[in-house]
Image (tube, rainbow, N blue to C red; front, top):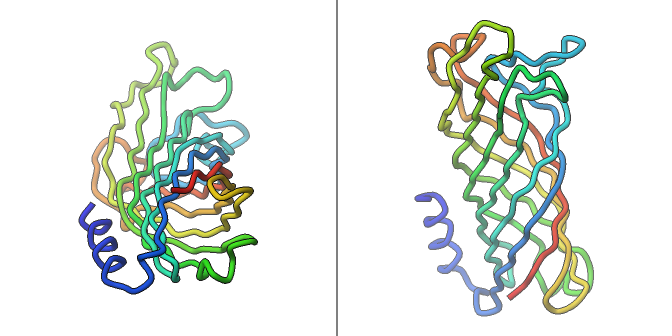
Length: 206
């Protein structure tokens, strides 16, 4: 949140904010290319659940000026991140990301009637959660409920059908900043988590 507040101060200090706009974007998509050292007991064909493709949903709130800079908060929820279909070893799992980003985008005067490309990145929270099924048939593992310092970087484009409504396409990479010590829940000495997301959402502009 400190990083997000700093981004806001930087943006407000720059010219072009008189033409600023808010964008609210609920989105859905796919999480893929996951990799983690957290114990991942649901495996099919030597491929852990976290490495498979999962559906996600979330949203972004963006504040953009008429120039090239903006800020955003982005939220991503991937249910079943540590689960395979019908295996039943894990009762429930998920991975949550909440990030504050700096946005660099094409000036609005050049893209008002076309797609407006952007890149964005920043820091925030990665929160994996895993609870093993009580009848899973494997050695009991502790409940995993971690708060990890992470970062994200990605980009995409926004295009509008009307003055108020449009669509956003987004491809993004999430990762822990560095492995952290967390005894009893990993297959390595340190906790690491990373994955990619591809999303599409409806944009509401104010």
